[in-house]
Image (tube, rainbow, N blue to C red; front, side):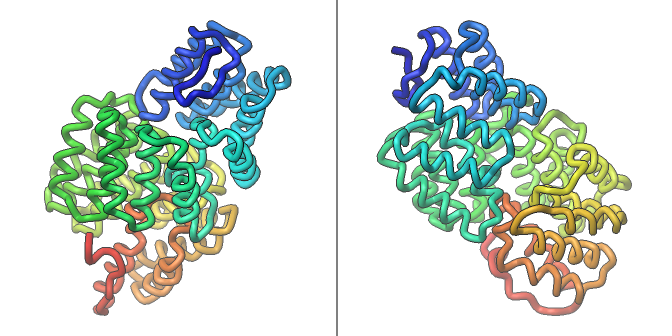
Length: 409
């Protein structure tokens, strides 16, 4: 019987299974070729439901919405012929594709009780952009860490799982264990781009600017520009260049890799990384060129025309505030769905006040959202922007600010 790399039985033959395994590994390593591998799998066996589910998940991650919808529809057509793990797998991934976050999370939890080594079913949960990451809960990082720690014995020395567990530890402040896990994961698979990205977060949290910059510079030199994480890895490099005072390198990295239209990247990363970099550059005294904020805002409105996801709306609101579009900024705050909606609205008010140099109001609004900023989604490194803006507002107002995180970064 054919199996995946985790020992789970697959209702297909060895050839289709081999393509499927290659697709999973490419997806897990943020490498190129995942969609092509899944397509080869279902081309060889047009009735392989999990091949279609893997293809759907890959298209979703890469932002190909129509293709994702078609692939999961085919998986669902085939699912009644299945039983056990594969039927449950398709059902859970289908809920993820439908955008039914809470229902998908519940289905995956139930699924993992019986099939803990179904890594593809687990994968939508992990990372800061996963089901936990965008849940809006103020303890979502701790919940994800608890889930992964509870599954650790089932996965053992698996490079993907160790990397995901490392990130959960990093985001909950367990830096020593995060470092040990990511170094082991990268020893097992040195070309794992997710692993390289997670190692960058460990270096960021410990203020290891030079070491992190050296590592990522070496890694990205041989990482395809078409890779899922290329633009985001360059964002980390650009932030470290700003921290080192090398604004020329920072802007060169932005122009070539991060700015909308510079190269392909997931729209969520392009929007949030571009807006974040422009703001952080401004805070460092490196004024963005004329029209830069307008370009980011136009991209955000085109890619995400309707408000809904808190982390996206937070960054569209920031771009709108800095570009002078007060109506769009306010609309993102009121239109966000989920538990973080009041916080996005308050942050949007703070961004507008910051843009207008109304420092007392900016301090009040940004200070109000800082205690529960985890609800926005994203990583600690990404959400540090809120505190950086708050600290800058205090300086402009002539006030002292007792930094919570920035003093150690």
